[in-house]
Amino acid sequence: MLDGIRVIELEGLGPAPFAAMLLADLGADVITIHRKGGAATPGMPDRSILDRGKRSIELDLKNTADLALARKLIAGADTLIEGFRPGVMEKLGLGPEACLTANPSLVYGRMTGWGQNSPLAETAGHDLNYIAMSGALWYASAPGQAPMTPTTLVGDIGGGAMYLVAGLLAGLLNARKTGAGTVVDAAIYDGSAHMMNLLMSLRQSGNLSEMRGQSLLDGPHWSRCYRCADDGFLSVQCLEPKFYACFLDVLNLSDDPDLAPQFDRTRWPHQTERLAQLFAGKPRDHWASLFDGTDACVAPVLSPSQAQAHPMNQTRQAWITENDTPQAAAAPRFSTYDWHPRPSPARGQHTDEILAELDHPGGSAASSG
Image (cartoon, rainbow, N blue to C red; front, side):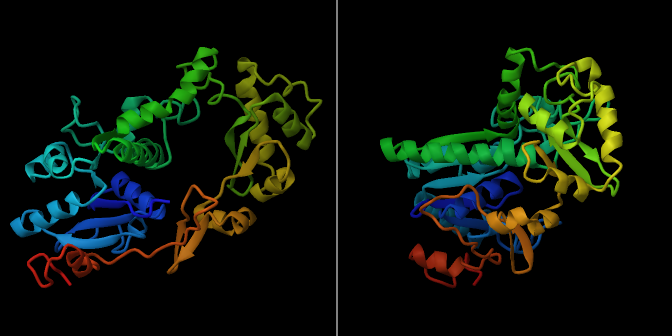
């Protein structure tokens, strides 16, 4: 879908390389500038899934010749992605002003936690800190428990990478129309706050309380996960009355007066305890089988490996294995674009190839073979 779009990515962490991977999944030519002589980030493999489908060149941006090559690459690109702290790119001479002067239609993507201009712009932070400050973490646990969220998904990926990609695509469309580039300031703090608008719409109808456990989706017995006899978990979220009725029917509890009131907040704690005791009596797969194919809005909580083996995945192939490495396939899907995973490169694997494209002789100070 993005064939013909060239993206230059400066090696970074978390949401920036994820955003570049998504663009590569969609067919863009993504060239990652890896640090010359560098190594993979601690805890990450040499050939990360996040680099799949990209090409790699190793450059030392503190070296004058290599910096000139980086400028040349950026000058011929449609998009740039960087995830440094504010001011770092400017110190390198690769800030927006310099790059847009050389390439006026460039869409310059910046990924940070706190944004380019904020009281915390120069302060370190991580996914959990950003979403804690933005309000996105507030409802992320049962009442009385410390908020906890799936690692990186709400902040780095949801509030960060996905908003960066949306901004880049919007910038590319505008550049095609006007010829003018733009700077995309994607902050995890901003994006995770923006994602809260779905919940904030509930506040307009009186269904969102700042008292945890008293809102439409974070307090009810019909919107939570339950532990089963084998320590597996079952997710339940039958919001609409017709789905709640189906839920009770499957459990043979349609005539139970204790569970009949669905929206009585005073009853939710007791109703939750009733269901917790019930689900604890049988293993997860028993319940999953019982609810399978119904409109009760119940599903087992699966690990990634369990999800890959589940019959649902046999049809959708959302999880695949490449080179003995389980990974999620590209999303979304298109009727006119058939995605196949492309391998992750070794660091510097395409250095000579990319230099040749720049009409630069091989064997230069920048080349790593």
